[in-house]
Structure formats: C-alpha cells, structure tokens
Image 1 (cartoon, rainbow over the protein chains, first blue to last red):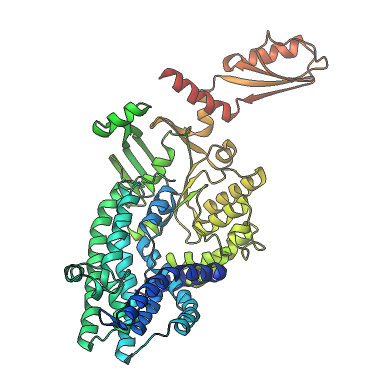
Image 2 (image 1 turned 120 degrees about the horizontal axis):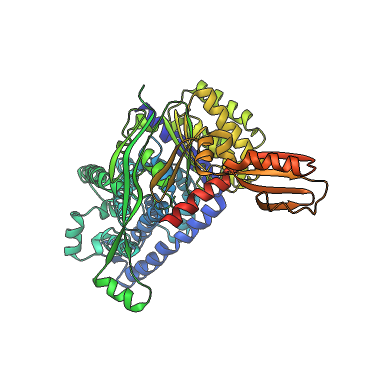
Length: 267
Length: 327
C-alpha cells in the first residue's frame, strides 16, 4: 500500500509539474471548453424566460448554476481516452509502461488526478467570471459540498474505468474510432452533459438509472445544485462506488485477455 | 548452475491478413479474408549465464526484437519455454519486472517536458528504490555518463545522444539484474556510441548484470560481447564466441600491402579489394594466406604487410547473404 501511495504522489507531482509547464496552454484549453456549456446555458435560459422563468423545474438561475458546475465536472471527467490507448499501442509507448512493476491504469489514474488539482485551481477564476455574467442561484448545504467533493472524484474514477475498458478494444484492433464515437454519442445523451437528466423523456431517465453515465455527470452536479436529501446524496455516492467496483472487476478480467493479445506492434 | 536466461524451442508466430493490390482484391477481402502465418521466431533455443554479455545479431525482421519482447514479458510465445531469473516472463510478476530492464533505442519513457531529474524521482517510486540507494546510484550514473550539466534541462531540449544517455540512466536506476538492450546506440554519433558502450560495460562489470544486446553496429558487439547469437528468418544460425563466427563463416583473410611502386599489379596474389596510392588490400583464401604472404615477400619489395581477419561486418553480411541465396 505504501508503495502505491508513494507512486501516486510521485506521478501526481510529475503531472502537476507538466501542467505548470503549459499553464497558459491549459488555460486556453479550459476557456475553449466553456464554449459548449455557455451555448447550452444561453439556449436553456432563453427557453426558461420564454416559459415564464422556469423549464422542467429549473429557473434561469438554476440553469446557470447547473452549467457553471458542469464546467468543473466536465474537467474532472477528462481521463485517458480510448484514442490515447490506440496511440499508445501504435507508438510503442505501452511496451515501456508494461515493463514497469505497476499496472498502466495506476499511471493513468495518478497522472490525471494530478492534473485535476491544476484544473480546479484554473477553474476558480473562470467560475467567478461565469457567475458574474450569468447570476446563478445556489442554495448549498454542507452535506452537499461534502458529497459533491467526493462525487467529482467518483465520476473521475468511473469514467477512467469506462474509457479504459473501451481502450482495451485496441488490443484486438487499432482501428476502432467509430466505436468510440458511438460510445460518446450515448454518453452525451445519457449522462446529463447535454441537458439535465430531469428534462429528458422519462424512459431515457429510467434507462440512465441502469447505466453508469449519469453517475459521471448529472449526479455530481445535482449533488451540489439540486435538492437531494442526505439519503439520496449518499445512495448516489454508493452507486458511484458500485460502478467503480464493477469497472475494476471488468477491467481486471478483460485486461487478462487483452494482454495476451498484445502484439507490441509499435516498438 | 541454472542459467539466468533459458530459452527452449521458442516460437512466436503471427497470423497476418494479406490480399492482392487493387479495388477488386479489396472488395473480395471484405468477404473472403486470407491470412498468412509469419514465423517471427521459430524453434529458437539458447541459455545465457549470469553476468554474460551476449550479442543478438540478425538483419531487420530476423526475430531479434520479438525474442527480446518475449523475454521481457511483453509477448506471449506461440510455443516453447522461456525462463529468466527463475521467472516465466509472460506472467509479468512484479518481482520479475523489478529485476529486468528493456531499453529500446528509439523509445523513451522519461517525461518530454521535464528535466530528467524529476523523471528519475518517478522511477524511484515505481521501483520502490530506497532513497539512499537511489541517490547513490543516480549520482554514480550521472558521473559515469557526464550528465551533471544536463539533468536539470527539460528532456526536449537535449540532443538525441544526451536523451539516450538519460533514458539509460532512468532504465537502470533500479539496478536490474538482466538488461535487454534493443539497438541502444541507434542514430547516435561515434563518440556517443562509445560512451554508451563504456557505460554498459561498466554496469555489467560493477553489478554482474546479464546483458542481451541487439545492434546493427558491429562496433557495439565487438566492444561488449564475447558471445553472439545470430538469428535469421526466426532460426538460430550461430551461437558461440564472436571470433568463432569469423572462423566459421569467413574463409578469407585480408592482406594489406604497401609497396614502393604503386603501379604493380597484385591480382595474381588475390582479389584486389581497394587500392589507395601505394596501399593495396587483397582478399585471399584463408588456407592460402601463408603461401601468398611468403610469395609477396619473396617476389616484391614490400614496405609494409598486414594480415587481418575479414571485418566482422563483412562476415555477418556474408552470413545473411548466403542464407538468403540458399533459401
């Protein structure tokens, strides 16, 4: 355990140092990233105003709160992608990682976790500017803050497991971009990224309860800006833990098959 | 004594799709895909004892890198037995990975954007190297490779040779007992190649490490390896001492003759390979070397005469060429 803590701290340190090296580029990247939620925000606040100030239970201020927190959750959701796995195998980088006495997934989790600390720091002034412009309404309890603080990391881990599982496909074939795009399409609709899940048709909401996507996006945002009870907050976090455990379980099984397929083509 | 590396009847075959060129063949291949089995390594066996430095030679596509990848646990063999340090590499146990290193000349594992000194710290954590041991090894290696002024510069600002030296330091910080070196000097200038060779030799002597080295530069092999294994089309062609390779595969010697009269025709003594002013090099059958040498000295006024084995590059080239022709 001590070995892993040491490894995680060292990798996170390297990640933070790298992000600091490119802090300006990171900032522009984040600014570019807020374009998407700002578009959603403008559209939904316009609709809400036209409908007398509320749509699907969301006021103009509530929409603003949802999409401002969205920007942080989106950044927390950035993990090593299946495209990255494709590149890593093609370029032979995975061979070098496999020579280490530590699973490559640990490297990814630790590296991107380090990045998150930089992201959170960079996000704060952006959130302040967005709040100044869009005037969100927040009614936050301490329990919500606690669960949200845990849930954004839960979301990060679920998405890491999901995209790593998807990335495993590249052990069999390195031309799978179309499958990845299909996945991202489903995720967009079923996660709460496009619109809050409560605005979706009931059947989509029901379907999303049985899939991992909403626990990576809608739940963390809702934990902070929604009106969930303590039981709902903690049971939601419990669902995140369940999906993380499921992801680790599946990843272990598939990894054992995948690694036997590895042909180290890229180096 | 149990060998450090034991390879027995190792084969690694790949099934690769193939089709003719053109649109028609492309469409047909959608419905009727054809495969061909490529025998990258086929029934290769060898043992390597602790502390040996062995050159693994062969042309491109011979199966050298595939064998190294199987030995390091990256690839699962199609058949055969592989044992390194008492471990089965394919199981990829962490204890095993802590005792080996694979250095590939064209691959890097250090962070591109950071000074090597930061990446070394990550290596320490990966291999759980005790802090004092880590600092001592790191500083020793930095001294040996004269990297003191470079370790604080981002890797991206270093030259190819400097980067390679850093990569080698990073790869060996955990003091692996077995080193798999896949063309570690590729693309480097002569000075840098020599520096890296010296370092590998020093590492081998100091820590008693076992080294399996592939290189297309015969200077690497001559400087480091007493023993070589030659592989071609996945088969072992030769396994023995380097000088035996020359004896076995070269039936010629090279005579260097310097004459006062550069116009004299020496073709009756052997095949004239080069003529540079008064200096002529001749290729003569090994069995006739003494006779030709005696004839030259008795027939002509000779200022200087040398007798040398065929350069190892030429021997290797002739081995591969003859095998190709025989196929």
